[in-house]
Structures are given as structure tokens and as C-alpha cells.
Image (cartoon, rainbow, N blue to C red; front, top):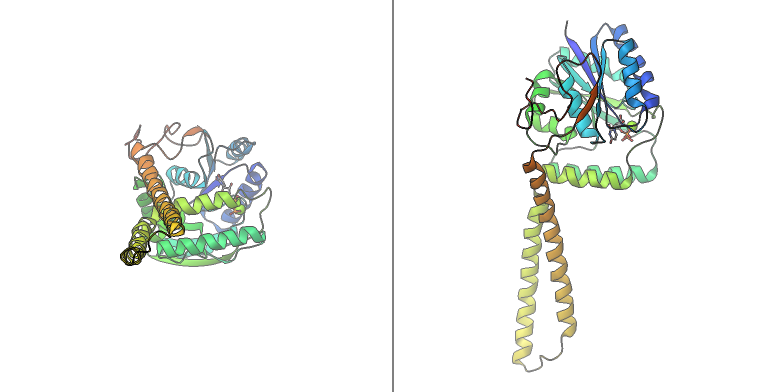
Length: 326
Ligand code: UDP
Ligand code: MG
């Protein structure tokens, strides 16, 4: 019997764990799907891990891990993928905003040969206006940069074991899970779903964390901002050529004393362009520096008893960094 693994990253979700575990277990048992649930507590400051431990003791199909600190949802997803053993893996939020009812349909599509099943949002659910606007802007920019329509995509998706292995082999640290399944290719199907209301607790994304997420993902998927530097350079060269001609003409005509305004403006404009360009280049250098250091994406501090292998610590599959447990 094929096994379905479900990865659930959780950060300060103590109130959701038991409910989510029960809802999913009930649904999957009803559907006759062999399953395992993998909860990854992302360095939660509340009792999330204690809750995970509790549900894992009640149901041997549930396992979990705790990070040594908050590493972010991406890291949680990848740690979860790493711990799965199933033939197909679904990644979903543990606040039940991704409706479990979509799981049987995803499973059916996978059984019929789909290797990736993308969860596509039909609506963004009830969110504050600010959140809606910033999320909207974020997806616009992302879709442009990645050249894929990201607007309705989400982290809710099913991946075949083959695809999971591909993603786990990627050596990069700055991953963007949502876009990586597009990038990887494979036979893709879609399932539309309506974003549900959060069960308990509140969203962890603020405007600034979303902006940071946007910039880091945009630069991990595109070098367009670097080309922007070149474009700005060309614009300023054209601009200065015109001004050079004008200045020379004025000099030859003998009235070159005026023009402090021009000088001040030029210094400001060029200075601005230069600093912006340096900032963009600096950002990429920082990313390269991070990647070159080769630190692991996450550090696991605890795992439930039913997790196979010695995964505590800075675990990295490729063995490039520390231990190799393949
Ligand atoms: N999450 C995480 N680490 C973080 C932030 C969030 O693992 O640093 C998890 C969170 O527990 C939830 C999912 O990512 O399961 C989505 O987060 P949230 O519900 O806050 O985002 P939203 O649904 O508002 O986009
Ligand atoms: Mg949510």
C-alpha cells in the first residue's frame, strides 16, 4: 500500500496541533489512505513541541521534530520533507487554512500519475486589507521576476517521492519552496481550494516579514535586480552625455559660471544611483557569502521516539556539512 506523508510546519501553534492531528487522522482513516504526519516545530516559544510529543505518543503514525531556534517556514518544510518516508508527500499549514478536504483529490490525482499537485487558491480568505495589499504586491513582483504565475499558488501541494528527492538534493540554502516545484517541472496537476479561516492563534506574517521574504525570494530566483544596475548605469551615461554637450556649448559661448544647481543635482542623482546599485550588489554578495559558508538550513534539537536515524543536530543529507545518513 502506498503511504502518504503530510508535512506540517508549526511555529507557536500549541492550540492547533491536537485538533489538526485528529482532523487529518480521521479523514485519512475514513478514506482508507495509509499515512504518516510529520510535525516540525520551528523553534516555538510555546508548548507546540509538547503537543506534538503528546499526539505522537497517542498515534504511532505521527512523528515530529523541534528546531533549536526559529529558522523560518522554509526550513520547517525542508526538515519535514527530510523526515518523510511516504511515496507521496503533502505540505500544508498546520492551522487548517489549507483545507484537508482537498487531500483525497490530490491523492487521487497522484494515483492517476500526477507527480506534482499544486494547490491553487480561489480566494485568499479573510485577511486584513494591509495583509491583502502587501501579499498582492509580493506576488505581482514575484511572478514578474520568476516568470511564473505565482498569484494563486501556495505551499499547499503534493509531491511525488521523486520530486521530494530532487528538492532535497538541492545544495542551496536560500530556498523558495513554492516556486521550486514549478522550477523542478514534472507532470503537474492542479487542485483549487478556498483558503479557510485560521483555527486558533494568529498569522505570523507582518508587513515587514513579508517584504523581507519577498526580497530574499526574488533574489534567490532572479538576477534581474543586478541587471537593473546596468540599466541605471546606461541611463545615467545617456543623461550625462546630454549634459556634457550642454555644458561644453555653454563654456564655448562664454557663460559657464552659472550651473551650481546642475552640479548639486548631478551629485545627488549619481550618488543615489551608485548607492542603490551598491546596495543591490551587496545584497547578492551577502547571499553568496551565506551560501558559501554552507551552514545547514536548520538545526534539530529534539525528535519524537518514532523518528528513524540520528537526525538531531545540523543534519544535512548530502553530507557536505556534517553527517550523512543516506
Ligand atoms: N510557520 C513556521 N515558521 C515561521 C512562521 C510560520 O513554521 O517562522 C508556519 C505556521 O505555523 C503555519 C504556516 O507556517 O503552519 C503558515 O503560517 P501563518 O498561518 O502564520 O501564515 P498565513 O497563513 O497567515 O500566511
Ligand atoms: Mg495560516
